[in-house]
Length: 237
Image 1 (tube, rainbow, N blue to C red):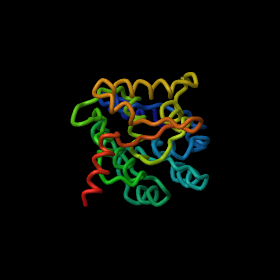
Image 2 (image 1 turned 90 degrees about the vertical axis):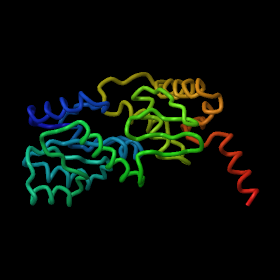
Image 3 (image 1 turned 135 degrees about the vertical axis):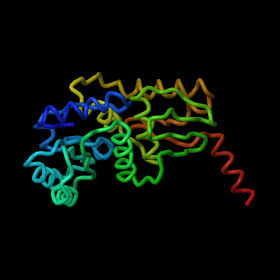
Image 4 (image 1 turned 90 degrees about the horizontal axis):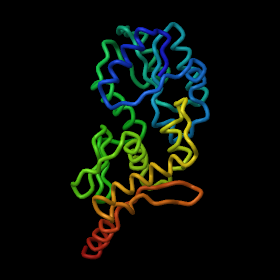
């Protein structure tokens, strides 16, 4: 997020601190260029939060014209119907008015994510796996799988793009694209390995759901047991 108003920024950050939402404060240059360089997959998953100022409308217009696909959320101190309508028409996805509350912020972010990824619900079912977009731990065959926030973010990205191979670069950008801390190149592989390991603690079958495509990336597929059940059901029809 970027906000030239330090007081409003602090109110927003304070609201986030009581929830499970990760955030990064970005400089003006990054906000103005619309996070250029992020892959499409990462851009659609990382919301850009901007504090409202006199130039915000022109900034939103410029971002959209430059091809920025990030969801754009605008922070305002109070509602102003004409200004807010202009921002939404220019390409802003949502407007958050003070006072800021963590649960509302989380809900609005989830709504924006679903809209951007053409999802109707906050949960995605793939075979025996249920992935929740609201921060809850996923479940395999109704058993919870305890994941860290970053591991859950990776799983949500794979689940919301089921059937597609997610490049390692897109996963890396999702986790670290806005962070000043840039870990070593194998960080994505370590997160994938940890997810598989935690899945395996539930059942070995679950650990095979994340498929590796050498030199391309990763994809989430239905477990073999679920695939066999579907095939049997189709044969019985």
